[in-house]
Image (cartoon, rainbow, N blue to C red; front, side, top):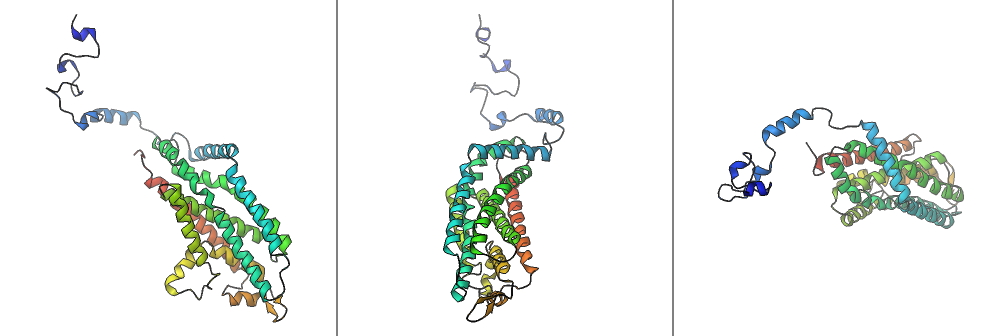
Length: 329
């Protein structure tokens, strides 16, 4: 019995194998990486067989499925949101007891302003735990999108919608703890909206940063650095008109500027005095801080924060769509 019949996988001569198939015979075959590529005619035939939509499911179906998966993951690992909620509850209780009954003088005004700026910083820092969220899912995202399991836009929208109710709960709990204890003035709904939108914008920023860094260590470093810069240029240490012209743009892009000014406008847009010794009204405080005193202007702060949130989500989508690896063409 010949060798060829004894072993179906063994061939005596290369001529017994279909042309174009590599063989281990060094006498008539030289290794070429092109030999491992699909022949052009086969690629052409496959192209005809796969004519149709690139994605099997619609955008809304993908978004719904991804949202369900996100909520299931949150149920399995609730510590991500529960830890943030517990931190805000503890800090809200501490703030409500520390800044309670401020004196009706210049020191009381300073105390109240310090409360607002600390609240803004607290909400920004509370979003830092979102840094490893996408970094841990990056390989899963690349693998699934490389097989066209879903669109990058579906992933972006599903992630945003998943966060919204949890961010609303965090803002509401903190607002209820400090609002009545500190007897803040102005519409409570505006105070709540500023906190909520601030969380959305900072969360969007942190998620965007996590998409452009290779690991969570660099992600935390980048977020902390930007947090320090945003805090420095938010208008608390230097009023916006005192910031040097070449650094004005930092005040504009700081996501802390707008919630800080919005909270102050909500508190001090009134003629009521806050300093019994010098009869200083709320409007005078805002003018001294170079903050607009018009009632309608405070809603611009909310719109700008929403604009930043949308921009960061768009940038996040761009990174996913055009800079993630292994995307099939």
